[in-house]
Length: 400
Ligand SMILES: C[S@@+](CC[C@H](N)C(=O)[O-])C[C@H]1O[C@@H](n2cnc3c(N)ncnc32)[C@H](O)[C@@H]1O
Image 1 (tube, rainbow, N blue to C red):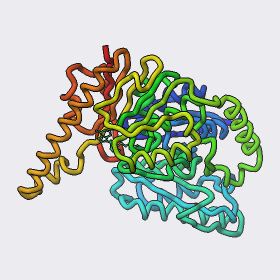
Image 2 (image 1 turned 90 degrees about the vertical axis):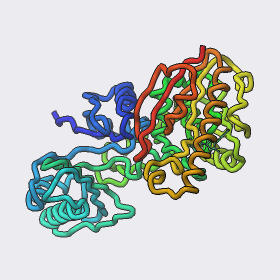
Image 3 (image 1 turned 45 degrees about the vertical axis):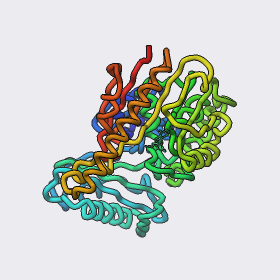
Image 4 (image 1 turned 90 degrees about the horizontal axis):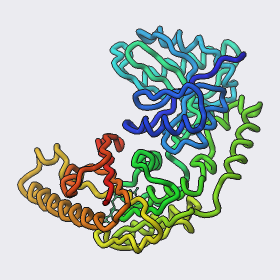
């Protein structure tokens, strides 16, 4: 029997629980939450399934080897011992990416990546009599080194382009959420796909689009190319497995969302960006776009039963950032105080508006402690996660 392969799906810090539940629901084996991601086991098809269906994962890595590498020579030897000819031919272009943590002898990630590249190229030259080329921008195969202390893990990246790039973001807007983080907010916030949904500060529309994709059961990886499709092994069994997987998924897609989805923003530019992205995602007919102030929203406008209000309000991060406050001259400090008052006013208005949504849940991805202070009640969920380098909070209120 062929031993099971080991995979590691990465995600935004703090969203591991959502990813673990998602991968378990896909019936993958040995699903285990770890720091920064979730591991699972299976055949190559298991990794492909995660690429097609996971809304929360950023990458899916197939682990080829784990070994001790105290220094550059150890890394070269360990990497050279992998049977690379199983995965690449001399015509396969490759790139090596490295992340390095607590490795004094190999602290430079570029140097570590170079050592791995040398090992791969030398091993293939010896085996095949010719070497493959490196293409850092658009390689056929991406090799990923993770070095933590002296433990090296070498993997292949199944997705290629990170999975949050679903392919629908044609208009970026201001401070858009990554698509997989938006999906994690919906999952961690307990937003139900079949109930009414409102994002009153939608920006480029990411939360509403992700909600519409869930509601219509459109897998996030259905319409984008995956890295593994360029692997030499793909043309054997995996290609037909991938085609079949997508066919089954397509048959599950609903023609329309079963409940209203409304996205609002005060700014016409945000509405224009959201409109473009909704169309690119193929869910324009499922989401009603409206221009208006979040403080004036009313559940009657959404229609249907009680559902979820879910949004990512402005944080005022730039003006209130710690570093800037310390160094800022007098005038900037006054401006920051002004911004703070504005933000407090906005949050109070939002809290008042939310009070009108009896029976609804209200989910926020918030970067400011001022939001929580504006609410008269305590959140029933308060969860820390990371929006890139920014620590943010997911808050859920039940409106009674
Ligand atoms: C952090 S951005 C949201 C980004 C969004 N989640 C995305 O992925 O693109 C906050 C949005 O709130 C909008 N906004 C600010 N104040 C508002 C208000 N009073 N009413 C409605 N929208 C508002 C801004 O125009 C901006 O688009």
